[in-house]
Length: 119
Image: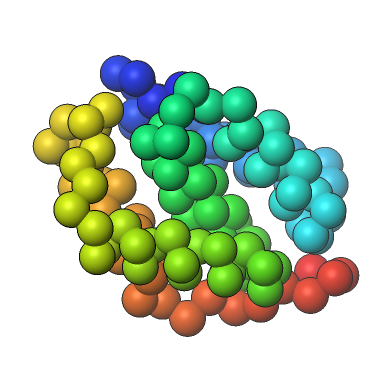
């Protein structure tokens, strides 16, 4: 995922990829990890990685209705750090930033259900 100048397009592509992938494969820890590798890893820098992780975990949570425990711990820590930080996300314009922060707050404030091994 490369966010430069294409935030909403990349967000929709991630959502579509998750939808397509999980029509063929079960939603479980191994497949979520595979999708994470495909959709998030390999981004250009730390800022893009943070944005990609938020987009991925938000879309995955919406699709699956929950996340594995380990992923919940990661996303809660990340969202809390984003909320507390003064980091400016220079890759995002105002509309993109508002959408991004909305996802961050939703992930931070929501009770995310735990997916089991056979979810």
